[in-house]
Amino acid sequence: MKRIAVFPGSFDPFTKGHESVIEKALGLFDEIVIAFGVNTSKQYAFETEKRIQHVKNIYASVPKISVVQYSGLTVDFCKSVQSKYILRGLRDTKDFEYEKAIALMNEKMAGIETVLFYTDPEVAAISSTIIREIHKSGGDISSFVTNFSDLV
Image 1: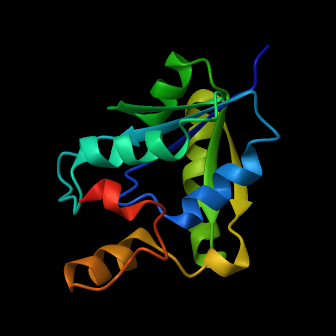
Image 2: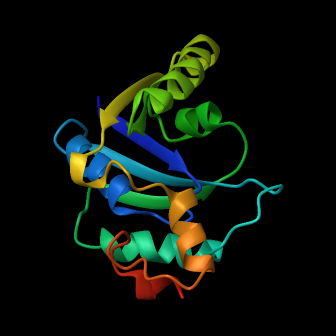
């Protein structure tokens, strides 16, 4: 049976921290689905189609990675792609506490296991929220986001 993992998020934008998580997971899974969740109440800084294409461009040469959009519960999406695993990245203990609660609920609801990876130390300070603020204020985010020009 294939080991398929889903890496869900809004990825607004997909940062080098996210890439760090993917790099760590590549050797453990046969397939990784980077899944863009739909949150109609959220205001995105970057257009959804551009965010998706941005990530597709980054991983175009990696056949075991696919990039898709989904709506609804993440555990339901996992079932639809026959994944028993959710990937999540951790920067610090605050992230751990947040992810732990969600992981326990996902396991209880659907038997989906969450695999947590610490991001590499050099990218641990990067968060999409901070990157959006820097971008909105006219700052240069190219050192935090691979191929940033894909997004604008």
